[in-house]
Length: 265
Image 1 (cartoon, one colour):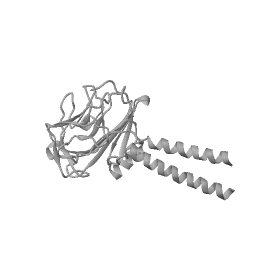
Image 2 (cartoon, rainbow, N blue to C red):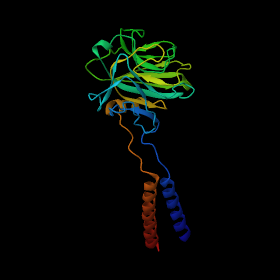
Image 3 (cartoon, rainbow, N blue to C red):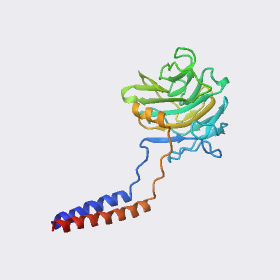
Image 4 (tube, rainbow, N blue to C red):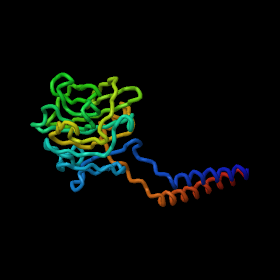
């Protein structure tokens, strides 16, 4: 019985010590989030990973999908120093909510793009995917159209997941999706919000809640984001706070073990 008692205390202590030095991300895989709620720092990354975007003329507007949004006038953009090349991020997911200006519904315009001239990872509006001007995605060798026209009155959810290992891309617009087999070559070592870094194609309208993951989210995870929106991860307590919590937990665990030992004896 003594041996079991000591072993139980050691296990409890080990667990508490592990917790005291561990900080787990609230949203695993989220590497950047731009909520555009800070008018004084429009490109602030609220994921906690400090990938702040450089603002090149975009403006703050309070009429976002959730809170504020970034407004692009057809000549402005934000630049993010995240390398979205397939060698760096073989799996990736990105997306946003968008609403177009009346004068911004003519092609071609990019929402998110790392293109260097070879149809690299990009989301925008285009005619080359068929069906007129629709929300579209580059496929590494062409354009995939969604059939959904850009809206000037409602927010549209758009996202794409990539998995280079199986040569797959899935494009999401509102409640529909299309999956294609494809492959991407090298691109820019950064990406732009509201702009194609190679050829322009400036966005005109509002963009909100740009998110980037370093994994290919499932259809269920994409649906959850679309339905519930996306928010910044909750602040993680400092290691010192974890240590206090761990000591308190250890004390409770030891008392519980003692009570059990007494009842057995």
